[in-house]
Structures are given as C-alpha cells and as structure tokens.
Image 1 (cartoon, rainbow, N blue to C red):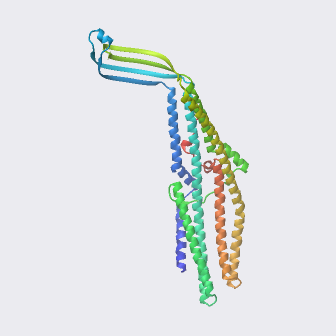
Image 2 (image 1 turned 180 degrees about the vertical axis):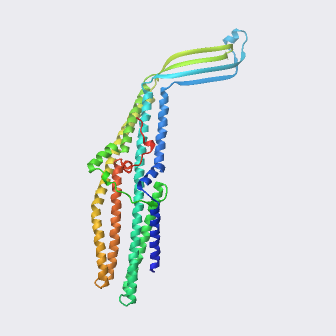
Image 3 (image 1 turned 60 degrees about the vertical axis):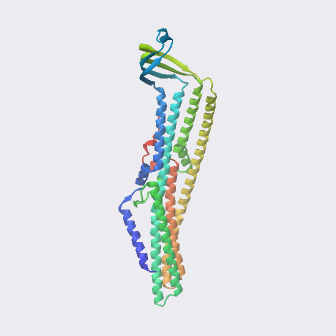
Length: 439
C-alpha cells in the first residue's frame, strides 16, 4: 500500500467538486423542476382535473335536454282503420322526424346539490394537489441536502485518508532511520486501511443520495449551490407554528372540503324523496303512419311530474350518506391530529439540532487544536503513535458530526415550513395550476 492510490482518490474528488461548481443549480431551481415533473404531483393534478369534468357534467343538469329522432323505412299495417277501408293491410314507405326538449324546473334542489358536491370535491382535490406539491417539495429538499452533505462527508473522508497517508509515510521514514518500531508501522498501516474503508463507505452513501435525488427530482444531481437557511421565516414559537398549521395546512383544507361534499351528497340523496317536475316540448313531422297515407304531425307542451312511490332503495341511500358524512368528519379529526404531531416532531428536531450545533462546533475546534498539539508532542516523543492516530480519528468524527448537525438543522427548518403549509411560499416556487380552487 502506498500514497499513489490516496493521491488518485483526492485528485478525483477535487475534479468532481470542480465539475459540480461549473454548472451549479440552486435549491429553488431543483424544487421548481420537481413540482413541474414529479409523477405524484402530476397524478394529483390530473385527478383534480378529472373531478372538475364531473362537476361540469353535473352542471349540465341545469340546462335543457334536446333530442332529435329521425327515421325512414317500410311499414305494413293491419288495424281497424285499414280493415274499415276494406284493404285488410296496407304497405307504405314510412318517414318520421321528432324533436323533444325537456327542462327541469323542480327536483328538491337535487341537481343543485349534486353540482355543489362536485364543486367541493374539486376544491378537495385542489388542496390535495397543494399538499402533494408540499410533500414532494420537502422530499426534493431532503434529497438536495443529502447530496450536498454527503459530498462534504466524502471530502472529509478524503482529507482523513490523506492525513493518515501522511502519518503512515512519516512513520515508515522514522522506521527506516531506526527511530520508530515495526509495531508503529503496522498500527499506522491498520488505521490507513480503516480510513480507506471510511472513504468507500461515504462514497457509497453519496451514490445512494444521488439515486434518491434522481428518483424524486427526475434527473441526476450535477452542481448544487450551497443551500440557504430559511430560519428567519420560521414561526417564533411552537404555539405559533401550530396555529399556522391549523389555519393553512392544505390537508386540513382538503378534509374540510370533503365534509362539505358529504353534506351536499346527503342533500342530493334527500332530494330523491320529492317529485321531479319537467317542462316537455315535443314536435313531430311524419308520413304514412299506421296505414294512413299522408302527413301526420303533432306538437305538444306539457308539464310532467314524476315521483317514485317505492323508496326503499332511496331510504338506504340517504342513510348511507349520513354515515359518509360522519366518516368525513372523523377523517378531518384524524388529519388534524396528524398535522399537530408532524409540527411537534419537526419543532423538536429543530430545537435539538440547534442546541447540539454549538457543542459540535466546540468539539471540532477543540479536537483540531488538540491534534496540532499532539503532532508536535509526538515529534519530540511526548505522545505515542496511538495517541496521535486516535486524535486524528476524533477530528474526523467531530467534523462528520458537525456536518450532519448542520444538515439536520437546515432540514428541520424546511420540515417546519412544510408542516405549516408554507414551504413552496418560502422557496418562492409557484404552486401547480391544478392547486387552484373554485370559488
């Protein structure tokens, strides 16, 4: 084992960093791209559009229905009229044309309730699209932060390997001069091998982070700008955060819209118990009907009412909608609890990461200073090799912990923003058009 492999790894890492910096994109750019192309967001948007078309179908119940029927063919007739004329039966070429127009004038507001039910469903799906966009944005933020952080960890592992390589080279030279021992060489060699495996492990984690980024965002990560803290946009306290979440979270608004839809569904079912009244206009132009030669035309304007006298099925349907309304209310209550829990967990993670960060920084500074002192003491024989190697490893672990703590703190900030329904707002990324509600 020699320093050539270490130099090659370091050179490759530096080359990758330079390539990343040449084509850097921001977190805002990545989130915007994700919202535009992520399948989960697009699926939610398509579902919203589909429900809107169901609303338009329900709107059609307000307008007249016009049907035209035309026909031509051959007819044979044997009826009292033909027999009275002494013909027995008659054969004619028959032509007919009819137009019928029906306009609903009363149905117990069943059509209106069905329209409003579907309108509420559209708004529910719009809020679901909003929520899906927020969740997906948070996933892309997490993927972005993981890639950036793991690149830092790879660099730390590379620096650690380089440090152990230099220590090993010095120990080998000391041994050749008769100053060191064979045990020192073997000890240093073992720590060097461990440093190599640490680099391999960090590189594997980086590849996993790259794969996760590609899955969420839709393309592999290239150059990524250093993420910016949004801590100044956070609520002042957990109580403020909970208030924002309960006022703004799209999942809660979607659940409220589902309750509204269930109410109108009940009203639609209740309308089955009242008559349906239509105005019907009909006009026809026929020739050679029922064995009578010549034109046979008529026109009529009627008001017709229809009422179903056997309503056992309708009664069950009405009761079904009562239970569905209860279900919608319970789902809303469950969603409220989940939103509260999410904010509390995010706030706890933020508070813990913020408190730990200061101490991790102290650990980095103190262990780095101690390492410099240990090296001087080792050179004059006041420290053993194992002391020096242990301190190098402590510096490495301290830097790893500090980098992870920084990453955890920043992600906790974004979690709180997502938990209050304001992540895309904070990133200045527009919502999909399908997140728009109907007034």
